[in-house]
Image 1 (cartoon, rainbow, N blue to C red):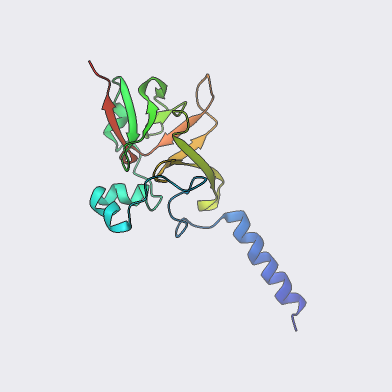
Image 2: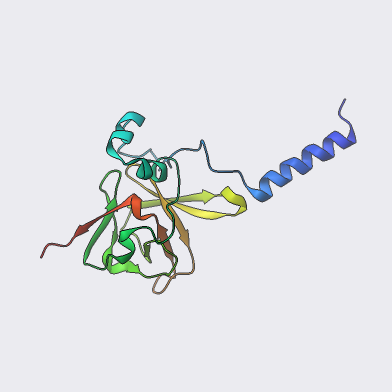
Length: 165
């Protein structure tokens, strides 16, 4: 028979889990409605990506701030998914957010999906590639006009394709 103390302790533990969130882990890559179009097996992902890219794209990791050369990429072109080469962001939407990660105020149409991320005791909006489901970074509402959005993206999750000359 459950005691009042057991009931209260169980309720308090459940409430604490909801408030602080669950750590990242076995959720795995995001799945868009109908599932991503590109889903190699784990062995193929590991062969295709560097260990750091695998940690970010497949295990929802984050690179250290100010570590990506793409922070300083200001040429005209397209930023694509490093996992599947889907075009994600135009260089015309890139801006310097001074956060240490490549930032964009708009994604290309239907290129990224989002879902709620409650890890690390906070609620954020995770951004993922709609083709392969790879984790890209997070979306915030403190960006510049015209959208007011800031897609804060891991540079290792991207490749840069320069515009033809």
